[in-house]
Length: 216
Ligand SMILES: [Zn+2]
Image (cartoon, rainbow, N blue to C red):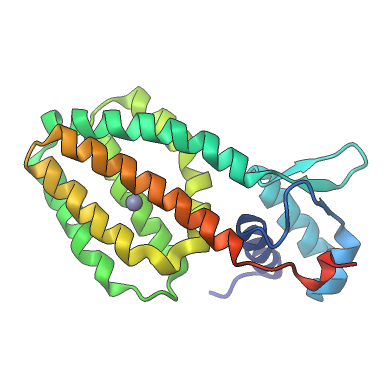
């Protein structure tokens, strides 16, 4: 089913905020967006409320919204995520079941089916690998805490989905370290993988440009 007008506007603005086409602390005005994107104000309003839910924009007292500093948000979350996932992978090495190893294998093999056009399924797929790994640590509190950071990373990934091949290769290396029960290597690989994902996000932002409605 095709996306509704509100969903299309939401996805477009989401991408623009994440790529930096719309900079941090930029006020978004319904009428200006409606004119530029050639839609009525209703889908714009719905899209802005979804962006609020995603913590990509913040309501301001005058009634509008401003964009959040997503780089700073992601940088903070990256530190949390590295701490959680390096702990998780070491726990998982002790606790992972053969069934979970098979699931991770399946995910690694499956990553080849998508092209660079399949941005959302690829981002979802990337996230599933990490989710399985965290679940394999069998710590409900850890899993819940990790899950709170997940959405932000999931949507941020869409801005650099064209570089996923290298990240999928790294998943395979992490899985091999888990199977070999090599905690030091697994920890190092997870740290490097998350650092490089963040660097790819920053690079993707460096190549973006401002849309017309931001120029006036
Ligand atoms: Zn990954």
